[in-house]
Image 1 (cartoon, rainbow over the protein chains, first blue to last red):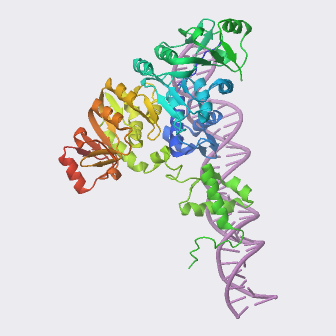
Image 2 (image 1 turned 30 degrees about the vertical axis):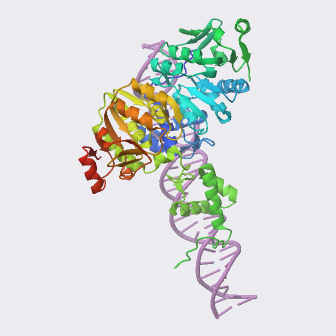
Image 3 (image 1 turned 180 degrees about the vertical axis):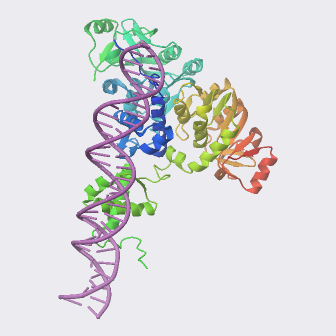
Length: 265
Length: 265
DNA sequence: TCGAAATGTGAGAAAACGAACATTGTGTTC
DNA sequence: GAACACAATGTTCGTTTTCTCACATTTCGA
């Protein structure tokens, strides 16, 4: 088991995560950033900026050049910035590969908040011909890069923890929407259902599920057989689980018995 | 005296002009070039490339950075959002300075879509203690950098044109919201009111205005006395105009007569 | 209190810069 | 055709900037 920390955590010392967000913002606004200028602007050592840029480069958010950084190739079109595709991005990438194999390119695609589903949406976006619905700000920002894609944003209170809009407003908005396929995320999965850490996002997640004809759970194997604080729903609402590798035999058997099939890349 | 060589002439030695054209082509394709890579590609000394870049920079074709060159500010992807943010950012910055002087840091701040209001929101964000409401995806994305800030996102159909969520859903959501001060943008302003280019965003803009107790128009002087295709509202809904510099005497007099005061940085 | 993560500091290495000077084509002049 | 002027290019070298690495320090949570 491991902490499923994905977001809203690492502001340990000064505010590294915030600084990196601001760096990306500057980058997308100006097209380039320089180490020296950033260190002056944020009043930190150049070494710190270099470490930030190095990390962001590893995540594919930018490309290093001598003296600073620039937009990565193929990401010229300025959108918002793509969100923190933080840790184990390899796993998320594999999940995305699995998702790509089964999600229809037309129709209404719902995208839940979270980094995994975001990566999936990024991969799918160029091929989609239908409509995307999401309450995740990073997902919406990414979709700006595809001018021909129809997108509906679900509004509400911005929950910094998962960078999505939630609450009564979001639930109300979802009542008028219908989703063909929903890409759902979760903090933990076991035979009894899906779990998240916070109850704040619960109602919104359930509203999305209720609006969806089919629910595909997109999650890497590290969430397997863990359990979270708040139960979202049972496995009966999920049709398939797209994941990066085989799960344990026991949990696999239970989940399969519940009528849910696995999709691997 | 020197030849005023414009094109097709000075291929004295190797083909300097042709090489410079190719450099520009590469630059526009990739968004950046590096001295080292170019010297390898053209099989010339790095010094030569530096001289080329220096000349092109003098002509305003590109902008030098350590190690290479990039597209000059305001000449990025055409019609792109970031370029609009960048273009006359000095003016927008001055507008933001004016806005900062008058917007209360507490209470509910509404932020309209558009680059000018976005810049204002970026400047204000660190100091805000109240709540921000916006339908603009970039604005919402920026607010993610401030975890302690309460933010409400207005959902709806994503309009790529202004990167904001609009339509009936947005209007409905705004009916339940109240805004103390609204930072409004416009494509044009004259004595008769505010204008935008597209009617798609009209209803949403009006809904924001209706929800607001006070409306501050944030716009640079270039919008003065122009007129757009679609009229949003009259000046009676606007209390103040935050702008970068003095407007023309005639338009200033008319607007002041309508009871609207100007705020300069 | 302890430990991990974040950040700062300093020195040596590497990269890039810019100026001065040498070299090579090209075209002109006699 | 030889001499010349000149622009383009290459080369060298000292200077400046940036990078990287190792280690010290700070901060905050457990």
